[in-house]
Length: 71
Length: 304
View 1 (cartoon, chains in turn blue, green):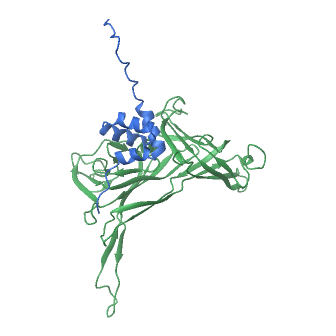
View 2 (spheres, helix red, strand yellow):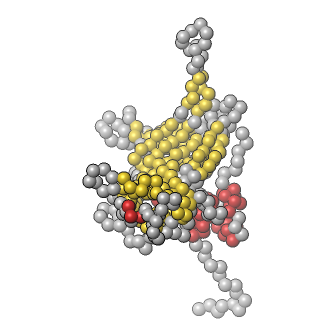
């Protein structure tokens, strides 16, 4: 068994992606599966996790939604 | 060759269990006969509102994608309707001989979710197709596509309903409306709609129960002026059936549907009955925004 380095940082807790998507769904009204797909596509789980902690749900919705188009 | 319906695809997600499907155009025609002719000499189309309508038994799959307010469509998340080609022998034509119609701009929403006693819940879905510029057809037609595999992944039915802390007892019918008032429109006299606005969202729940004793003035009852309800004391629970048996999935398994709501509950029909049939009592709850969460909180992968 390898020795543990004395200053090794503890591994971060794995994100509960389903719970995170459901939390965002509750605030934004978007579908949890849709959210999970979009966040996965953007590789943004850590990003949205931080945004959820800051209650930035409008920002999350804008971030994952398609850009407004010029008419 | 006749064509038949298939599942709805939104992005990478299939919504199967389809019982009805429609591709709508809704052209607004202008046909005005003018002086000198009883027949129109000119006719034109002022506007076209293209869309899809689906009704599905796969309520959990639909809600998990659509959530409460629906999803915006994009090139990455289009809505796709399939028309499956059937031969004169009555069966699906082999090979890539089918059709797909897709919207890459617009929004997909659910309209109603309903379930009767012992029935399978079903959900009505509407897809709004928008043009990116007003002149480009919002519908992209693909011919010669392969027939996707059949999709029908689950059945859910009524488990329990509680509104404002009052259990609804012997529930016989349930109906939820998302209540989205959406106006799609165009500008510059473009024929195709290019934008949409959500004017209001006033969701409603209607519950029919045999428990007439729930209406009253005593504690634990709902009086005629109604009561307030919160997400903490209000739920709609739909349980998932086990396939191929007359049993339900274990309550602890997170594949059931739980919807909570905030708002006001009022008896809209305290009691009605015909002859010697069981009398019905109907409650309606209008959901509101509690300042924090959406009026409906939908968990389509929940334990009971």
